[in-house]
Structure formats: C-alpha cells, structure tokens
Length: 483
Image (cartoon, rainbow, N blue to C red; front, side):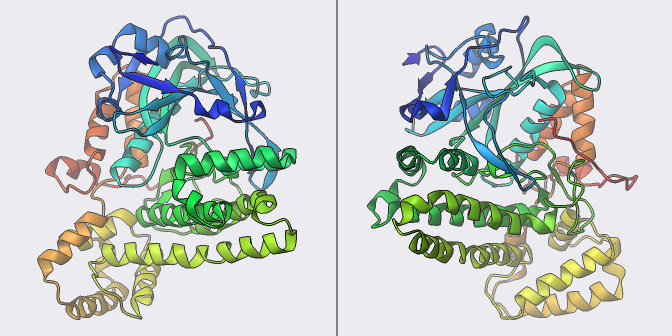
C-alpha cells in the first residue's frame, strides 16, 4: 500500500512467521516531534520524495507518533549471548514500522530506535537521547562510505521530551534502514523454544529474503549456514582493514545478511594496538580489535547449533556437517584480510612471504604506537610519519620496495590501488564527539560538514586534510552502551 506523495511502499512479510517471533507494538506518542536530520541521498535511493519527507507528517512518523500506510508496527523477538551469557531478549526500544519495497524491487526494513517501550522492554523506558542517535547516524554512514556492509540511517527526530540518564538529555529517535533485522539471536530464540517447525519457517524466511539461491541446493539449510559464514568472514575482514572496533559483538548484534548493526560502544583505532577496547563495560577485552575474528567464529558456531535439527535427523551427522562448514571460516577470513592488506600495500599479485611482510609492518606500528589510518595513508601519498624515521621501519620499507619491484604494475597503478583501499579520513573519535557536542547545543553545521567529508573517504581531497590529524592529547577514548 502506498502513500503516493512520499513514495512509501510497505509490507510486513515478517508477520507471516509464527506470532511468537514478534509482538504488535502501538506507537508511544511524544509531545513535539521535529526532524533534526534527513539522509537525502539514502531517501532518494529508496525511491522516496525528499521534499515531502521534510514535512511535519514525516517528523511524526520518524518520532514514532504515526504508522506507515496502515501497517501495524512490531517489536521483534530474539535471544543472544551477551558477553558470553545467554538470555532471551527482543526489541526493547525499537519498533519495525514496515518493509519498504524500493523501485528496484529491494526489500528493506524501516525501523525506529528509541521509540519507546515495547513488550520486550524489561523495565526500561524504551527511549534514546539525541547524542547517541546522531552518533549511530554518523558512524553507520561513514561505514557505508568506506564500502562496508552496514545498516544505514535515514533520519533522526527529536521528541520534545527529556530522557533521564545520569543527567537530563534531549530525547530522540533514529530511523534505521536494514536489509533485515534477522540476527543470530533470532535463530537462538527459535532454537531455545524447541519448536522445530518454527525454526524451519524462520530458516525458510531467511533463505527467501537473503539467499534465495540456497533453495536450489540439495541441502538449503546447510547452504544458509555456508552463506552466512562467508558473509561474516568478509565483513569482519573489512572491519579489521580499516581499524574498526565494534565493541559489543553479542550474538544478537550479528546479522544473517552480513551487515554491521548496532553502533553502541564502537570506534576506530587511532594508535595501532591489537588489544584496543573502547567499550567501558568490556573490562576483560572480550571484544577487542584482535579478538573480533575469533568472536565472529564463536558467534557463527552458536548459529550453527541452532540449525542442527534442520541439518540432519541424526545429531552426530548434523554436527559433522556444521563443523565442516565452520572449519572454513578462519581461512575465508584470512583470505579476505590478506587480499585487502595486499591492496593497501599496492600489491597486485601474491607471494608466499606477503603475510610476513604485513605482520612485520603491524609489529613496527605497534611498537611505535603509529596511527593506523595515517600510516597507510602516508605510504599511499608519500608523506612521512614519525615512525618512518626508525631503523625498524627503514628495513621493512626496503623489503616492501623490493616486493613492489617484483610486479609489473607501474607506480601510478600502485598508488591508485592503494588510494582505493586506504581511506584518507575516518570518523575520528574526537571529531565525532566535537560534532555531537555542537549538535546537542543546537548547531548542526559541524556534524553536517563531518558527514560530507566522510561521504567519500577515499577521495583524498583538500577538504579532508583537516580531518586527518589524530587527537593531540593522546588520551584513551571510551564509549558507552548509549545507543
């Protein structure tokens, strides 16, 4: 059903699943909805009329006061291992407005985050504050610019009502767009209920929505597992290649589609250190930078466990089938990561010692606390970092130069390849905080300029130069589960 003047074309196929997977959720009305930011580019790609979206009626939708085209909003049920501990969960402050069908025929979820209480709220107020919602907007759009699969942000609206945390904050709602919100935790929820037919319906829905090619396979559920493993191996490699640390890789934050989701205590590394953790609550470093590939494999193992009843009627045989697919994750990840690292160093072909060359560079970077992004940026454009004057780096550079000379591509093509894989800018933590502080004080200009710079991070423009500098004070950065 369409609202023609805006372009919404919404359905709710998720509600074809058994009712246990969701709860109908009525809007939590707010007093004074007002749109703060609209993603014009994303809206246009979805086939929506941006001028109409900027009107008051859309602010009411984006704040959760109104429904989309008569569709009943829902909160989705799921479970999850949170820091290793299993619990039954669900959308405690999120509401799925519907699934928008684009002009190209793609189906995307339109979800509100921070829209108020749901049947899964467990005592929380279901609300969110302006700063964290804008933070997810900035980081998710930066990830999109970097070419990393991600949920995206369509809009942020303020509610006109306060949110009470450690202090009184401005209430806000984020409108998030995703290929779907199916998670490993969704399957864990189904498996925990031990109703095999419900699990089968969920798996069929995931296949239909994300991996329809699996339907043609002899074993579609095993194919589903293989596709998810492949997607996640590629995704985590992309995170590592740009120094992104998710911070809360619980199983309910791993999508079946392979998109990055939930930008809570996440950030990008400045100084390279594999044990870097940004989350204030990750005191054991479970979700540190170096642990992300291993945690992804752990999460995928939990996903495989949920599928066992569908893989084979004999459990031992089902386990063997799952283990065979899971055993390929590490190599898939390493292949993706090394391919990306070769490109970051301008290498078009493969040599046996490439992995040593990469790891030796990272060791030197760690020893000298070199900035991760700027090291590769400077290698790309021929600039100098402080580390470049050390004996260790000089020795490494000689080996790298010799390696480049053993391939037929000229320096121009080498630099072009490196520019395509080494971002000139990332959402530096201090720059993000600067923009959020200004926005919370009513000035959106700083944030809008940051978003513009992050839109094309591989462009190496003059405009990006001022965003290249790391923080000057060298203090450690902490993030919190505010989103």
